[in-house]
Amino acid sequence: MFASAAESGVTGFMVPGISLESSLKAAFLSETRTGVYASAGIHPNEFDPDYPDNPADISEILLRPRVIAVGETGLDLYREGISAELQIKMFKKHIRLAEAFGLTLIVHSRNAEREVLDVLGDDVAVPVIMHCFTGPDDIAIEAADRGYYIGFAGPLTFKKNDQLRDLARSLPPDRILIETDAPYLSPEPHRGKRNEPSYVKYIADTISEIWDRDTSMTAVTLMKNSMEALQLGPFLRTDLVYLLYGNIYMNITGRCANRCRFCIKDRADGIGHYYLKHHREPLETRLESIIESLSPRMGEELVFCGYGEPTMRPELLKKLARSASERGFRVRLNTNGTCLSWLSPGETASLLEPFDSISVSLNASCKEEYNAVCRPENGNAWDRLLEFIELAGRAASVRLTAVKHSGVCMESVKKLAKNLSLPLRIRG
Image: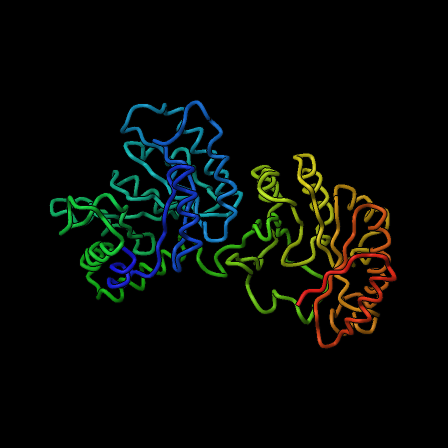
């Protein structure tokens, strides 16, 4: 399959989940094959009426770095078995998960297109893909007007399906996606056979005919649409929660009062296939929704960090940490320890109350080194850092860290940590 796809010019794959089991398989495949991404969701025909919370089980899968969408989800009123009421309830849970995690929503709608739009409303906070659309023209036009993407699969190529081709012709080119829905709905000339990713070229050729464009120009537009729809790129999304080293990390801010010469955010948009750079401060409501969607079983600790300094949002940090602690998480703070530059000792002590442990970036052995390497806004940041370390030790277990840098004497850093009677972790 991958070889034939490559021969056809297909280099990227979105593998959707339709159940907990298939979502896990899709996530595993995305981690083991280059160019593969996954989604996680419970298809409306896969809901277990006796287990109404099963969409919550996909939250852990959504933390994985190459799982970039929620779905397939939606409504299916073609088949009997799962009540419309239960389907709508589960669909809404998926929408909330997509918005909390900031992931694209892949929507199934069969004999339920109007109902799907009614549930979605006008203000979904993430991209929406109307997957494998074959519904009424007016629904597609309304969805495109809302900014949703319309996905066309094999039926677009069927010889007698002029209606669907006319619909594609009427839609804005920047709202159109193509897909296979493999192993189903093979396009002409393979109709009736098992579908595969390489056959997407036939759908692309049909779009070229509809647009009356050169196939290479069509491919450029469709690729751009796909990248934007799936938020694949450093300027398209910010991952506010991610999973590394067995821990869950919360990326709550991009602000920092230091400009450390070794800071990773000056060299990369993220780590481990996560996009972590902020283009605006994340909404408090979204961060709260993330905490509510997580379970302590998903990681050993819940770590508040950020592509910045988390204590620069002190009230939010305390609120989120307290909520996580009440949900049973072991909670850790990763900080540069300079918050006494903008908080009083009493405010700082109150801020640290929910935390079980605190990791403090020492990074120097004296004020001169610190100012040269970490370049703080406050000239007294080193003094505030040492005061913070003492204060933090009264609140929780404290560990120091230091990044190797040419301007820092690491032996002196080790000696300082020993004098403070605190463990030190040196990072390369």
